[in-house]
Length: 173
Image (cartoon, rainbow, N blue to C red; front, top):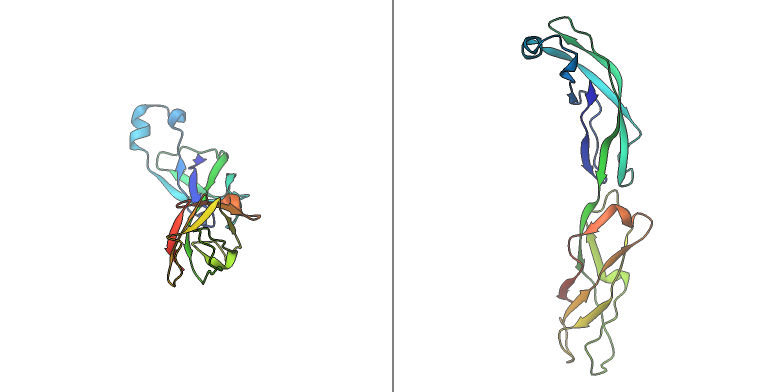
């Protein structure tokens, strides 16, 4: 009996009680036994993964509980060294706040961290945004101007646990 691998997104929980498993049928004496056996019971796993663990692979091992066979077969419990696979959480960035500049006849824009809003972060983590460029929609003086940011990347200690839904964003500031 081997725990079935589980794939989760960064920040999600893993079910360790009553988890599904793979039954290795090579131990049955005949194909008839395999098809007529009814396995019941519940088993619990242990893992070095906990909610909020970084993106990566974690073990999922048998811990407690038992399964029974209607035909009287006994089981051995195996471990799954790569039983939990944690993938990056997708986040979205939008523009907020006010950006202003002294008129200089160009469309160049300078933004700070307060101009961005990030949604879908796990546990209120702090992630930064850097970009390769930002420009206003035109060079004219006014309010409610559109602005476009390109080449966005994530910064911060937990940045590797996230992926941007888009590396550019546009909006009115």
